[in-house]
Length: 302
Image (cartoon, rainbow, N blue to C red; front, side, top):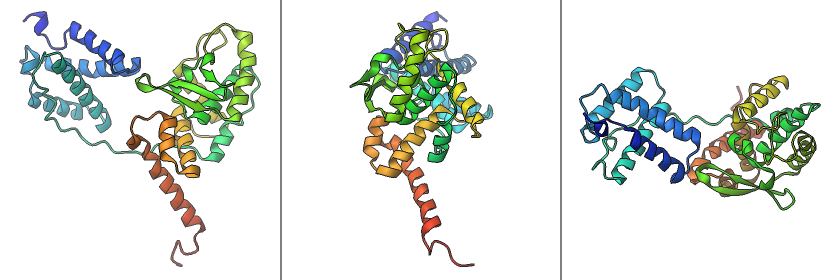
């Protein structure tokens, strides 16, 4: 068997990675996730009597799914593995390395659609009222205010540069998923917090382009932001808070007050309105709570 016949050869893997990065615009984390899934599939295929891509059948792919179930992977994780396989074989089809994809006939399990976790407005106010004393505290407050004000992903917050602000910092230019840029208005509380942090930041390193830096002048990582927010939430008597909860809270609170789902889609940077519609379920739950609390005939007298 030649190297060219071995499944998932290095050249194809490298080309696929470049495709994910340059054409699909996926982040490095997404690229790595796809390749990890494909490596698992490659290891499984190595145990089968397959010397070329064309010998991989839908039955083999279905057996692989069964193995993932046996390994106790969640339905959502299995969906991602199948998506990785489908994407790779579609890439092979585009490059005439296969005639069809063995994943076309594979039925994936439906993952339960869990509603996103959100904070109430009171919880957000509690989180944002932590006492800032040290320079990194003022930085963390600016991060919290900006994520909640603009509905940012944590990676977007980490990647913000000073020159991403426009119109006297009234708007923030954000590079989101798929290398799509969107312009988001910045609230006055967030703007004030950013201005206060900039005074401390410029004493640490006035020349760096990154907005959020550590005390060594290095751009603050996604992991560091996650850990700082979790620590602050616990100190404020809240359950551990993930940055994405602030993004969900941003969308939910906007929908509750405006009902404008289309505008929220634009602010969040969702390519499809169906992705944003999950917040309508949260808004519906909010309305139910108000009804049950306020309507005199919400419950039968016991």
